[in-house]
Length: 139
Image (tube, rainbow, N blue to C red; front, side, top):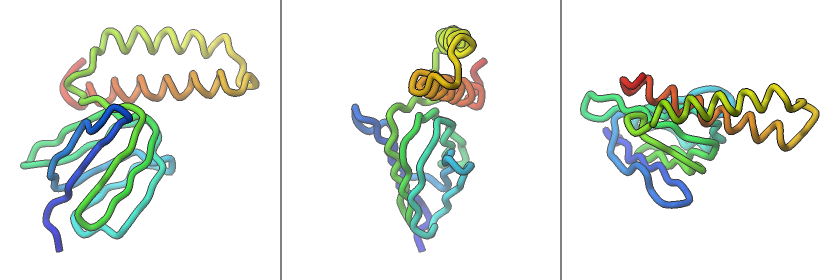
């Protein structure tokens, strides 16, 4: 049985993370799941949130937007629209964007359909960035 997992996080612009890890946690649409070496095959739809991985005793948090994860005994591949390491998040800018999106949500009815859903997705992505930053020690 494998003792490490090859983690790859890929966005439309290319790989963001490519590293060997001990453990991976990711946010699926049905809740968070974890992957250890030897995991059974899994395919999961992801929602915006924080992917955490542990390597050499250090935990790293990265924000991901919606996407998909494929896991197996020795590999996890995450395909997502966007991803950023929590240490690289510009928290002031993200907080300002989140406030603006929240104001927009207050003026748009849930019956507005696509516009409302897009604003919710955007806010989840901004929340994910702030969560990853906080977990990485940024305020």
